[in-house]
Length: 201
Ligand SMILES: Nc1nc2c(ncn2[C@@H]2O[C@H](COP(=O)(O)OP(=O)(O)O)[C@@H](O)[C@H]2O)c(=O)[nH]1
Ligand SMILES: [Mg+2]
Image (cartoon, rainbow, N blue to C red; front, side):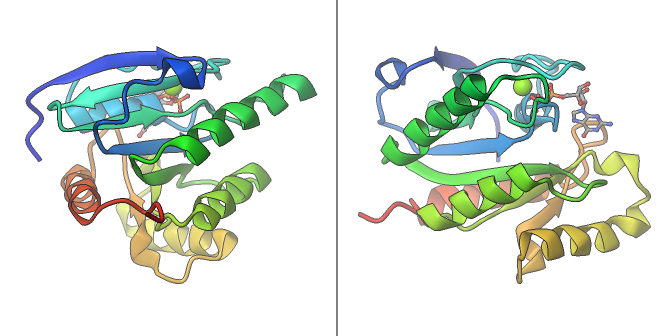
């Protein structure tokens, strides 16, 4: 995939603020700090269009990145931030639910996890949600630079076990640091855009 243009098109706090649903979208879900913003930067080959942080963020917005005026990558608010109140967690769930359930131009929602760790209860919940809506269930196993390449298989196997994924090819080891499998991710996303929406028409 050739990235010609990439812009942060919209930061939306509510449904009314979403951009027009005129382009296909691929959304990224995952824990706060798992590397969603870094993934977007690596994907578009920019240092910091998407703002990254070493501290778990409290951003509660849906961020729309327009790529090539052809599709959007959508950065969903991260979860698992320990120090939030119940009402903030409910608010997070509402924001994600509103996006997932109303976006007819949403082609896939991809889950990012940390390759080194067992997916958390919230990862499992998010993944089940993604599958229930009817998406394929791609998983980006991020921060793969932190373990030896020879061990990627064994960590992928573990993630597959915890998330109950039969087809291990759905899980792609990835790193925004050393860009491992960036080509594969580009191909995968191209295929998603080509084969169309997971939404029931
Ligand atoms: N080593 C390594 N660090 C990463 C990777 N992706 C993200 N990080 C770091 O993890 C932290 C959180 O990243 P960020 O993209 O802001 O996560 P987000 O909260 O999911 O958007 C930052 O300090 C990043 O530099 C990766 O692939 N490898
Ligand atoms: Mg982020």
